[in-house]
Image (cartoon, rainbow, N blue to C red; front, side, top):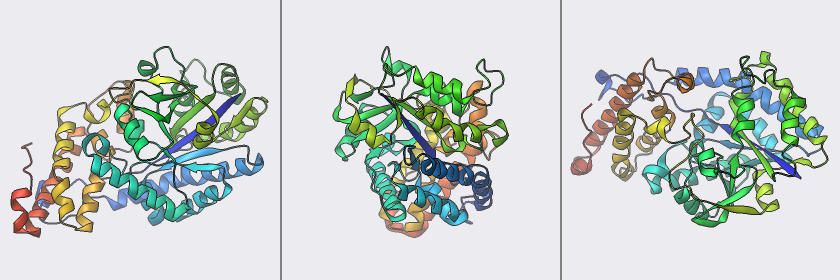
Length: 408
């Protein structure tokens, strides 16, 4: 028997305005509402509405045998509520079917686990409350931002009560092992680790429309044949990808919706195949060994490490300076100030500062509102300077606690 576990990441950040040095102390309109609305409505039309409607239809068409899971960031949920409430309605329908699982993550899609465990826990709690309010669910499985994972995170998530956690099935952590089994981290024997089958996932997410790929065109029978070969050599195939794969990254005219529509029926033709949610996978299969993931792994770029966000000096400087403000910002009890700061923790801002090139370069440019990584850095640091200004204006008593920004 082999189970297929579909997991989709749904995320949209609050993109920053091109905040200038002359704006510091004049206004605190940090985020480009026009750009955010424009992109949200565009992706809603191309991806979120048609894909969600299709998945709902597939659940009904296959009498509940088709299942999938989602992790939807708090920043995406807020923008759905504001700009595309019909998407929220569809996700509520998905929740009501009982065939869809919603996963836990950081509300602001942040790197907070790497910098502040207190902020990490706060964002996870905020996200859980949002899911409960909107969909009436309490997640049991955790997915960290960009599948960033290591031994420490496994232990932390275990102590927070989660039964399972998702991660990238990178070759350098698996060695000779297969991603098609469950594992545990050496530090956390009670939480089960589900690893992405990156080859089969990326065949859809990245290579589907690539005509230079030797397997192009990717047909449903061909793809399902690859899946069927796992029978007897694995328990679960974890197909993890961005939800925007459907209709946005891979356009409708490439046949991506037709592919998705016919995929479940072809998979279910094999008597040993089935679809499961992450919680069902965790309950159904034993672990097959321990993995020692000392250095963080992610699903980003060819390196599958943290270099997409910490790969150069300006990224590290922006991150370190931002987290300097955490304690003093929170001590103000100013909801707007805290919210503005938390929106800056979103990983996308640092991704836009990446200076990598070759294959990864085009990915880093996607939906990037800046012409260069340095433009992004300058706007970010100007905003931090304005936050510093707001803190000084708020109370003189806190002057000694306000951190100094390093010079750019």
